[in-house]
Amino acid sequence: MAPRILLVLGPLLIGVFLFGCGEGNSESSSPSAENLFESRTMVPPGSFTSGIEGPAVDAEGNLYAVDYKRNRTIGVVPPDGEASVFVDLPEGSRGNGIRFDSEGTMLVADYTGHNVLAIDPSTREVRVYAHESRMNQPNDLAIGANDRLYASDPNWSESTGQIWRVDRDGDTTLLEAGMGTTNGIEVGPDNETLYVNESVQRNVWAYDLSENGSISDKRLFIEFSSHGLDGMRADMDGNLYITRHGKGSVVKVSPDGKVLREIDLAGKNPTNIAFGGEEGRQAYVTVADRGTIETFRVDRPGRSWRLRRERRK
Image (cartoon, rainbow, N blue to C red; front, side, top):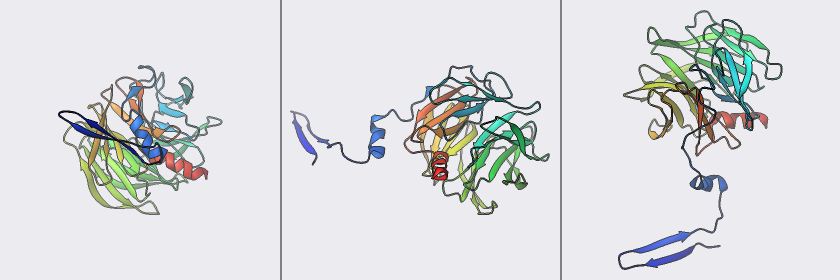
């Protein structure tokens, strides 16, 4: 059915309005009917401690974040249910970034124990996946399509940081030292780019990522003039969503390093972000000063959501 054209005549204005027939791709046309990039509070403020971090979504759509109700826990928020404690971490451990591997195992950065922990989602058994005494405090995690982990490793007191690789057998490799305060870290949707930001220095760096997990060709992706940087995640088109600690926003940056938009939050100290929902277009942001999770719709699915779909084929 062809579009209909309506001419509206008036003494000062002639308007031409096009009315479509309603056909076309539902994914591309649906955002116009949605309230995209408008944040709302998902769980009651104060449900989590100020240490809330590490949002991650499993294959069933459950959302996880650390420090629910009390420190040293991981909380779970089901798609249609109330939040609860999923697991208590061992004495001496404290969680931060969370990721899921291709088998559904939860991998957690344990910054006080200098570990990456592995949690069986069925038994909830916690074990040490990797230990590295040379780590300052493993902070955030990224994961490649081959299940290799990459960990940011800041030293907050000295405003320095490192990047580590953690292979599937638990072996650790120092990829770079002498950086600024490394924090947010992500693998791009091409699985050939690694992004790392520095919170205090407000830089985001990009590296070429080889098939064997080595990095090269370090280059400045984008820098900011104010406010800290925290966790970040990519969508399937390679746009980076970066949490702005102290500014109370999430900034969306294009693959060529251009700011596309900034999403305002109710809280001022977002710590990390993840994507989930049925279409992979729901963003979840952990917010430390409110002890809650804020959420908003985006226009394109998250890279991690697409990776889960590809793994299940």
